[in-house]
Image (cartoon, rainbow, N blue to C red; front, side, top):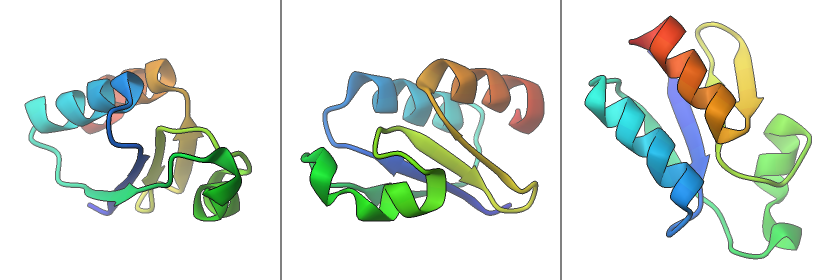
Length: 79
């Protein structure tokens, strides 16, 4: 499975997603992003916006933002 999570250190929304992925024993790679929105070009390139968290599931062709949507996806599709 090829899951990537774009995350910001100390972001409580990102931590919720990390916790859900870990609790469900889902393997993933974390890309840590810059604190300044203006420096998050990599996130914008994959998702069209600069907010985090952003989850990319390459196997299923899914890219999504918003922690609540990501948590729902983890529970329904990955767990």
